[in-house]
Image (cartoon, rainbow, N blue to C red; front, side, top):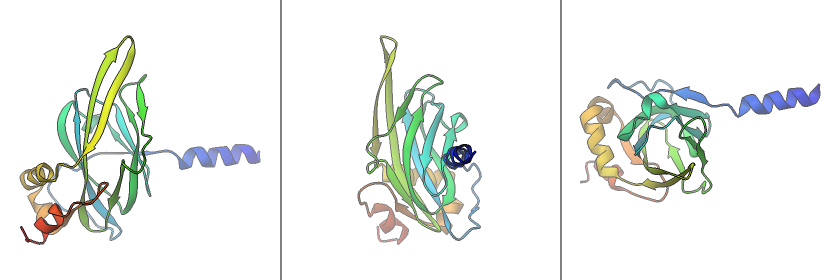
Length: 177
């Protein structure tokens, strides 16, 4: 009985919540311990889901993962998150090994740009081959926010929350550029 209870707690604790990207240009941060994350997705196929672990485990679903290049804006609890798995279809998925490279930070009350996930797939002899990179395209992300979410951008500072260091967005927010 104890084993079953421990198994259920472990299983339920690892579940991810499906999230949808923000579509309307209005600031929805009501909780002081949350912030926005902006992720770019550039894929040559439509993906089934992207799973991200952190203070709240989430799953970005097929609704927001069209083939081509797009950006996804989410409101999440502040903290450190990492991309752990991408599902291409019911049968094909990739697990992310290099956790440090696929980690991003969400700071309270800010828009945090995590980077652009560039994903290229190719079928070869009944197996799926893929190449995946996380690229910093800060200027393109900023142009997207200016065009699609000017109200949110005017009320929040934007910073780079991906791996490494980049002060371009912070300087832009401080009007130093």
